Length: 424
Length: 83
Image (tube, rainbow over all chains, first blue to last red; front, side, top):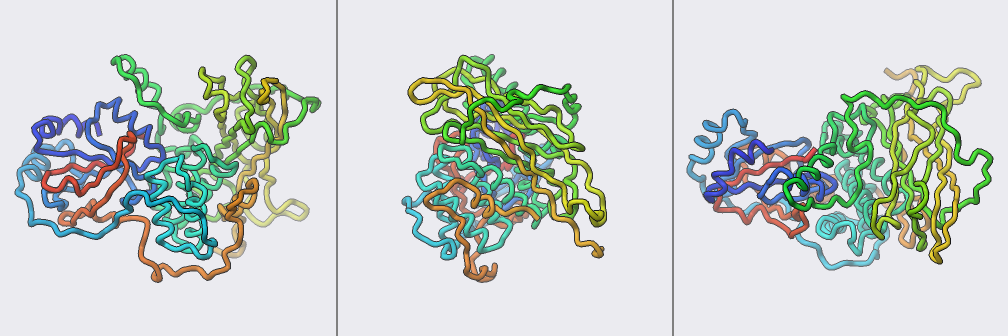
């Protein structure tokens, strides 16, 4: 997009052309940072639910004064003949009549959840999308809107409604009312939508953003550290990014996989540390599968899966800022591969807010190949796909006392169903 | 193929408005309800189509913007992602 911004700058400054952007990313602040970095001065609209209907981006459209599309997918190398002469030089068409089309509108008054899931209708879903879109992650009706969209997706059975439900789940995951399974539920909803419509590349990208390295067409947000640095060098204050980048979001499939590290020592091999039952820290896990699985019946997930583990202080507990960061011990079963078994969460950044902020780590694991054909006699029908381990951390109670605690972690990779043998 | 969001919801900690209760009503046929969820994507890629009203929030949180407000000007609409 920078090339179009540069080519049209003069037309915009003369008032002869307006530029508008629309992005379908989950996180609007990242696109706002991109715009600041690139010096974009045009408005960029946020469309995380994909209301424009596109299945792929980028798409450029030239619209005349009457609101009629006159130019589609112009090529920057044909700027003179296509854009300047063919579009800018062309007189406007007849005045367009208003198209009712589609309008979510601004948020309506908050409502309390009063309907049984079976009673949810399309207008309820529309209102919930509207509230989430315009209200953000701190929408007062977040819980009822998530429930509404999930109930509607279940009722309608349409892939797009499934996608919407996933977007809502991920929005809640990034806000103060996050639930333990929000991220996994979002991924499952997106996978279900993609399985029904594998040609929807924007939905595919939403999964790949957090998925395993080899499933990425490109690195998604590796530009952010460079953008922040360059904006600071210009003497500006970079726009903040609310949700820290995961390792997956900056991973690049063209770079070599991290080399496996040697055997690590379990941080609490004898199980001596006192346990936290989740009252001080909530453990949230999600497994993001390779999107090659969408719509196919296969026994082995292609490539690897990306495991995300989040630790979220609760009940007034705070991280201790003068001890080592939490550790995750998650060995993989025989035949699986993982770079390491011991994972360190990131160190705390400065500031009081960081003491209660969630800490996240993510990494890849690969399952062994599951042999084709029916299981042999005596063998389990499917691979055991649950990884078990624990986290250890120092956490401070509301009275200021800091304690070391251990908590069990289980991650289940949702393996595909076996194919029906005998079928083609 | 995959565990459904509903099955994950059922695993979550108890919430006052849990969605885990089963919906016993019959599924709605797509033809029974007005289409909701997206515009026809051909609007953006077909010369001669009329751009509908579309109001969305701005990514920088500074407000909302309606495409219809640009009537009377030539517009280059760029649908993109920062990745």
